[in-house]
Amino acid sequence: MGADPRGNFKDVGRYAITKNEDDMGRFKTPTLRNLANRGPYMHDGSFPTLQDALADHVGGNNWNSRIDMEIHSLNVLTLDEREDLMRFLDSLNGKLPPNVGPPPNLVVPAKTAPSGK
Image (tube, rainbow, N blue to C red; front, side):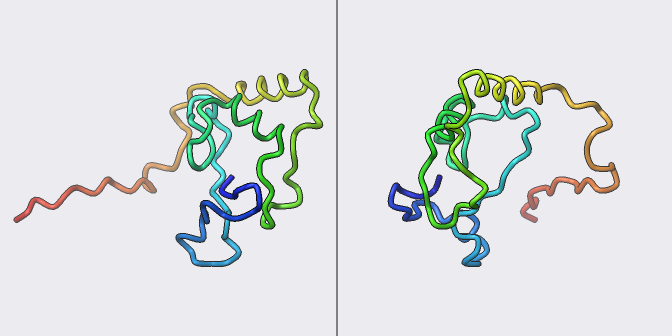
């Protein structure tokens, strides 16, 4: 994502914030927890469903010179394995226990708008 089929960036990713050349085309990767409930998918919301995002990864997405060599097309997965992957991702959905999250003393209170006085 973020590059056209020739490897030219449509979206520079983290580079827009950091101005670090190594961040060109990099995006923050969110947790997989409750993934099915957080569509649309990809950094730009280009896939409405998780199934659509998986199909894009099966197809190989767009190559660019900054893609980690460990990232590759999922076209090696059989149809059964793709279904297993979707079931696994779905298994990560659920209600979080009340004791999960940062300790209360680390929660930063929300800022209130100035009163204009």
